[in-house]
Amino acid sequence: MGDVYKDYLKNYNKAKTMYKKCEKWVKYADVCVLEGNYDEAISYYDKAKNYEKMGDVYKDYLKNYNKAKENYKKGENWVKYADVCVLNEDYESAGDIYKDKLKDYIKAKEMYRKCENWVKYAETCELNGDFEEAGDIYKDKVKNYIKAKEMYKKCENWEKYVELCLLRGEYEEAGDIYKDKVKNYVKAKEMYKKCENWDKYAETCELNGNFEEAGDIYKDRFRNYTKAKEMYRKGEKWEKYADVCVLGGNYDEAIKYYIEIKNYEKIGDVYRKHIKDYKMAKVYYRKCEKWEKYARACELNGEYEEAGDIYNEIIRDFGKAKEMYKKGKNYLKFLATFFKR
Image (tube, rainbow, N blue to C red; front, side, top):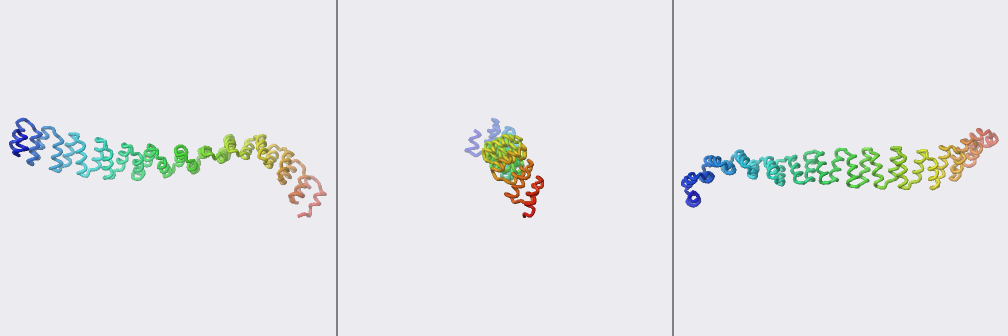
């Protein structure tokens, strides 16, 4: 009967009487709202524990947004709670509700953007799987490069990850990304060179097929002749391979490879400087016509006259020729070259 009085006859007093008799407190309160008796309506909604409708009264009629939120919270009506936050321009609270209660990350991001709460915006991006966007926010807005890198790593955006490494001077890590993830060995080498990590630099040279360069690093930086030889062998750089053999004291092996490439001068050097076999040194210096070294081998072997002849007749260094003749006590040849210039 109360519904008839309310909806058709618009007799709100009779409707309330009917609703009171059957203890329909929510409908009783609804009629109070129609009458504009908002306080009475709230009283009966409270009696019925209908927090949503209490919130509606506070929001729509009394414009008391705090009380509205309080009642929506009691009734766990989070959509209307968020709506009131927006009406009240409390965008952060609205975002929190959308994020934590409603799991509506799109709406949450919209709210956080409005209030420029970039930390919560980025957190919501992460919850929604928008890792690249989260990384961008952490980098550009929050300036939290560690979190930004974490996000870029999650979405495997290695280009942006490396960009942050460079911004922070983390060249080794940048090199690792270029080497292991991007397979850009040229850039990786550039990074390792900047931080002087020669071990990883050489490793990257090998991966990129730059065997000679890798060998040079192992030889000159680390004195690791075994690795250097391995690299030179891979790159078929036999002269450098042999050079390392000399450094490691493997003279016979060095000579073997110098012979293969016909580098007679270096064979002569090994015999002269290391093995001290001056006769063999002379053989190879003669083959490549390295007469100054030939003369030096003669001198070291006590063959001063022959050394003098080389200086006199081939090199035309008369001062050295006289010195050799004098050492060999060949005064006739000494006098013959005395006035030569």
